[in-house]
Length: 376
Figure 1 (cartoon, rainbow, N blue to C red):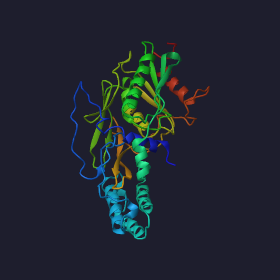
Figure 2: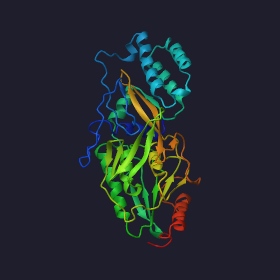
Figure 3: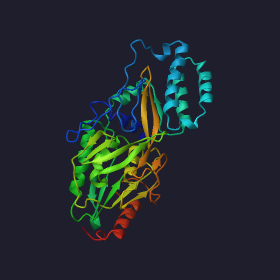
Figure 4: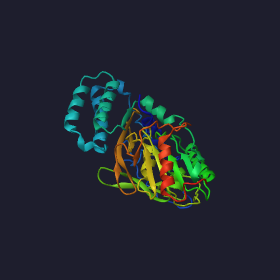
């Protein structure tokens, strides 16, 4: 069974590129690229957070199980071509050898499932731990599922510190908007002139749609470029926060009510754990390089990368890692993110009497910032 961050990524992929999901910023219109994909790929530079508009299969397309063997080979080659040309780690694979072995296996296949396995094995060779192959049934289920999840919440701690938990979100459209609005509403309710610092807990954020996360946390995160996607050719696309809106380049993906805290640039402690994955890692990265910010906890799941989706002729999906995430300083990530202060402890945020990660964050705020260290 795939870990949740990968399943959440599938829903996350469904959260942006379609006309229904892409938002219109009526206050500050932004140019949107309308260039169609040149192949049957559903190729967006940020399908880690972008939605998919599946290509329509040819009316004459047949299920792979009924195709002549030469057409199975063509199907295989189409998938291999896409992977070889677009994978983040494509340069680390011996493609002539991979193709030769794939063709050798395909020469004796008797079902389409065996072709699927060849493509899955090819994706495994990439070693990115984020790519996947979905058969047509699984792809349809991912496309039409009803994503949901917990909502952001928080509470005031002693010493004028506000605690804010940002969970996963796999929703799109109204669900994503509700999540972002709830996040800002909670922040507004917790905020006061006495709040000296914030703790942002990402320990149970296993991924999903990064854009409502960024829009929702924007009052604490602050405006400006907070990260980017970096591609193998060196090109990049920025993540930008502006007035509660989260942009990828010039494209608006999510928005929340604009709110400026009583302390517009508060100190922030970010909590991460082994379950912090994919889009959860994107939020952690967005705080990297921010002034007066420090991270605590455990290393993250290790999938801070961006995926695209390519739809095969029978409706199967190749979900392919194509880019790294980078922080505001330009530092890229492609493995577990190590917090500034490592504390190996239970990462659960359920109520308890012993939470050394939270305690360390509170201690840092108390000892570092004069406004903290007293009851607010």
